[in-house]
Image (cartoon, rainbow, N blue to C red; front, side):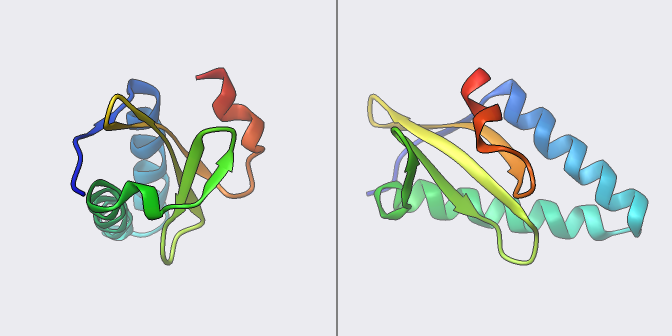
Length: 97
């Protein structure tokens, strides 16, 4: 069941911040992060209901090789990514989005 995936402005900012941080650590590492993020978004879009519900109606898919979780909700048959948080951050932060 493929669905449309939208990314909130706040989640886009999360991705941009992580990308820049990884690029500062090592040139090209931000691109590797972005690749893993894109692959995860494609996985979410192809089978969102297979991803575990973690908080209320929020599902989280954790990236491979990077300590980030993509927090998303289903609305009217579409996926809305609301946050992309480092796993060390409190899950309570996404609720403010």
